[in-house]
Length: 81
Image (cartoon, rainbow, N blue to C red; front, side, top):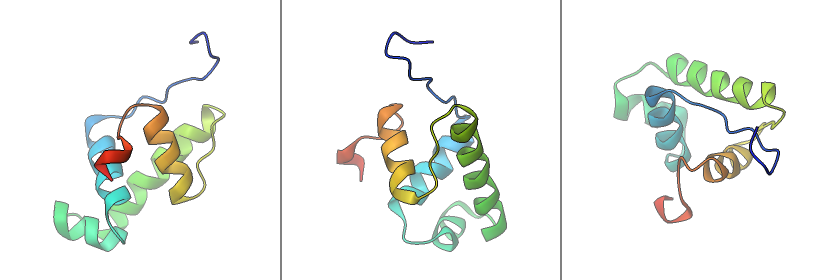
């Protein structure tokens, strides 16, 4: 565990790709169109990401919370949004 006590959630390359696309998009359907995925696939990935944060004791129940977690873990910067 890091000195600050925060456990960094490890996301796969595909999870990071979908998370970043969703954080920049208005809807999961838009992400699906961009990445050639079904809406349900995007929803599944986002749910799995939320579950990983929940298991790490860092819940991210809203899109805003996921933005915060992604910034904290270095997956995205404010300038990327």
